Amino acid sequence: FILFFIGFYMAIERTLSIIKPDAVAKNVIGQIVARFEQAGLKVVAARLAQLSRAEAERFYAVHSARPFFKDLVDFMVSGPVFVQVLEGENAIQKNRDLMGATDPKKAEPGTIRADFADSIDANAVHGSDAAETAAVEVAFFFPESQVYSR
Ligand code: GDP
Ligand code: MG
Image (cartoon, rainbow, N blue to C red; front, side):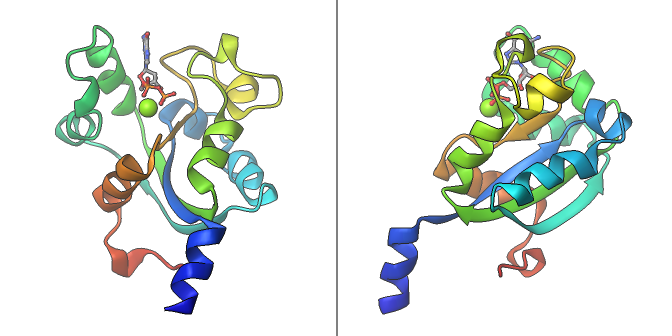
């Protein structure tokens, strides 16, 4: 019970991070993961995955009515991705801050997208945007038994 409240105040969260096909192809998985670790986030689950079209469409279902949906799905299945669960204090917002803006041209210098992304399509990383989506996205890739909280 007391541990619950300590956990609450420290806001230890989990978030889903995906290193997208462009960054995997550039061989910068390690450089990107290093940024998460240097910011105090822990990798508590990780694997390479080749998404099927159906999986990519389901993962990005919230965007299915957007004009860029087909391009997004085409891109996400174009090669393997590196999916991870990151854990730490305020992990969701911390990861978003490390990522930078969706459009790398607008991303702050020193962010992952500013440094590794080429375009709004090939923008290096995905990160959950809120607690509700983080829970759904983590469960999309990893059963609880494959997440090693520490
Ligand atoms: P994110 O949370 O920063 O990744 O951005 P969104 O959730 O809004 O969009 C999901 C992904 O769709 C982005 O990472 C981009 O790869 C892509 N995307 C978003 N907006 C656009 C757009 O206006 N044009 C294109 N071509 N792709 C977009
Ligand atoms: Mg998003």
